[in-house]
Length: 289
Image 1 (tube, rainbow, N blue to C red):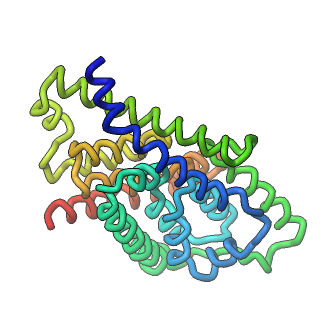
Image 2 (cartoon, rainbow, N blue to C red):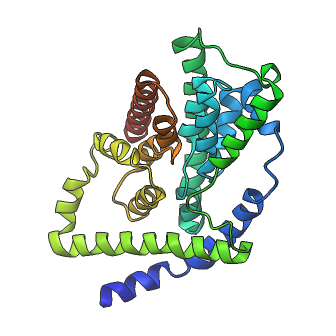
Image 3 (cartoon, rainbow, N blue to C red):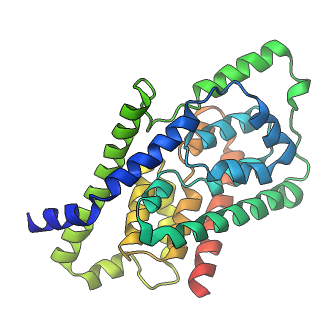
């Protein structure tokens, strides 16, 4: 009971900040999605615009990018840029903790630069011969069908759009706070039960190899994973480089869509390998510097 009360005391102030963050996000998420400018921008500006879109804490963008890639409307580099830049629920969590603001800024800048560099590297070095279908080249009925499919797969599994905005934001706040509370409780109990030194060995704390562990952990397609990574970082369990590595590989449900909707084994393997290698290199570099 003392541990529970201590965690509540340390985390309850996150609730109003999380709620405000989700209210703002809901306003943008509920805007009319019929505007095609984003689709054209993803084609015209490729990885650059993909990195910008990916920074927006909305898991639906990785799903959208995956569907556009499968339809050959965007390049592999653009898809990779979106996935690298995506951080899902980690951003609201770091926003709700004022002491993490400097780390959040560093995270966003780092992910943006890495996403752009890797995205263009993939397009102009690894996949120079890939071809994309421009929207103006598609038949009207084909475009309408594809757009409906994109809209249908752009739903956020963590959202509650069937409810009014204030209610939906509150439900999302309580859900994510629940993840935060459980993570904090489990970590505290582990520290109490096995000792902080044992936990540090399990998490490879202060080891240059920790990003290998968090990068693998990041591949789990669930928003709870980003919550766990953000909380581990906030509590000092993992380094910034390890947090970055885990968030680079965590592309929301975008990877699931590639598998579910018919990407070839070669394409899926490429995406996994590029994300994992990028995560390891970036994570280790931040630990070294």
